[in-house]
Picture 1 (cartoon, rainbow, N blue to C red):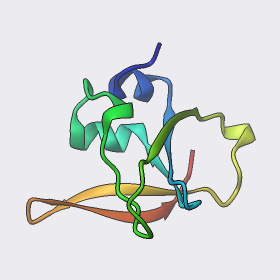
Picture 2 (picture 1 turned 90 degrees about the vertical axis):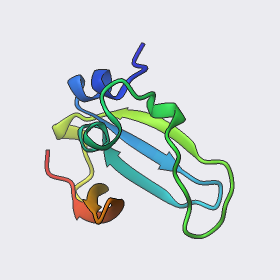
Picture 3 (picture 1 turned 120 degrees about the vertical axis):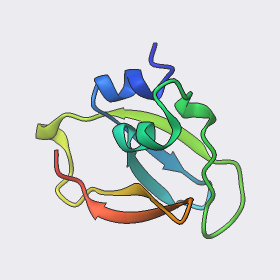
Picture 4 (picture 1 turned 180 degrees about the vertical axis):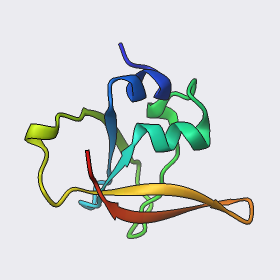
Length: 93
């Protein structure tokens, strides 16, 4: 049972964040662990949708380099002036 960001990072997993409106984002568990710490529960992290404000569904996705889509885009957190700012980059396993 993977219930922390630290365990998800050991298994090289992505978090798939889905909104009911169809908005989907992928985040590396290692990037989230740097911001929220390794003991954080990935299913209790708060994410907002830029299109609407419904309940967000979080899924852990195991990363296997041979089966990844070529155009997978992830969202990486960075700290700027004490705030977390997200930017998009291509996923490179």
